[in-house]
Image (cartoon, rainbow, N blue to C red):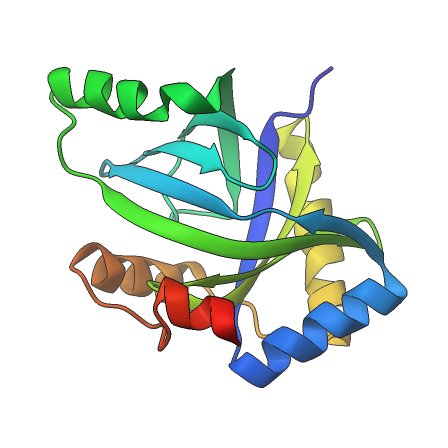
Length: 191
């Protein structure tokens, strides 16, 4: 059975922790590589739809998360891949269908695997420095164990998990245009 439920926890970090964590995971985990992407988020009250133009991996996809960030740690996902050169056409199709408002975000990220937890160490203008921890499962019954495993690894690494309430407040601020990041995309690429 395909694992299609993403169990995800997040932690906001500062610039120093960002680089310390990348170095630690590169030395003690498995470096899964750079994963930079342009992402277009279409927001709904209870779901998240996004178009991802994966710059590093030279592919693109549409992802529907059947639960919005801040409404729990597990998200059933439906994904459809398509050629990267069609990203603008897909955005246009969504616009014609009435989905005109979206948030754009460039994500500078590197992925690692450590103790069976996938880490995305990220910088975006909206979220600033942060990391996402993820385990994919195939059943809702597996979610509590995945959360427990990620929480233990986060504790070991000195990461504070953002609660659903904090995530909801943060994403509401970001949805309203607030930006946590101190660097533009161009400035971040210079550090």
